[in-house]
Length: 204
Image (cartoon, rainbow, N blue to C red; front, side, top):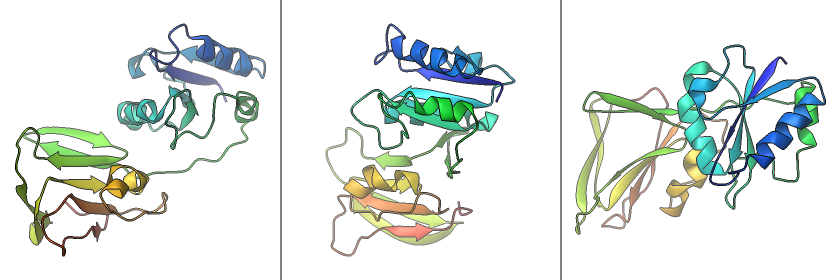
């Protein structure tokens, strides 16, 4: 391993104490590490990114560096760290990572497009009523074929990774993270027959 980029959450590590500790830990194993303020500072020869913060930091990082096809290691510095493999007390594990002792778990992502603007997401995409104080009608098409219509507060389209987040709170199923599928779950639907729908990943 040549170089690792560290992207810290400045709200949780404002003085960069934890980020510098990671740099020193990796340096002790002969691996160079650089603290980056954003993905734009990631060196071209980078082999891995360490996202230091909470789940929000990892999700944001995944959106920004997906095009670089780099593995992300999450180190939790906050309260919510379901996606993070490491906790604050696990800095010694970085020595094993520096030595190449790790496995990569691949996760599918969503591509969301609206009005000519596209974005990608590791967890989910949400369509909601916003500030409107009434429920909305949402028709769901899969490859231009109508599959269901909902009267609800909104709709969650989730990846397997996101199945344990907002989708689960709305009554969606828990999906094994390595699978490739989409979970469509209505938010507070009007009617007892409205349930989640599972779709293959190649559908639009």
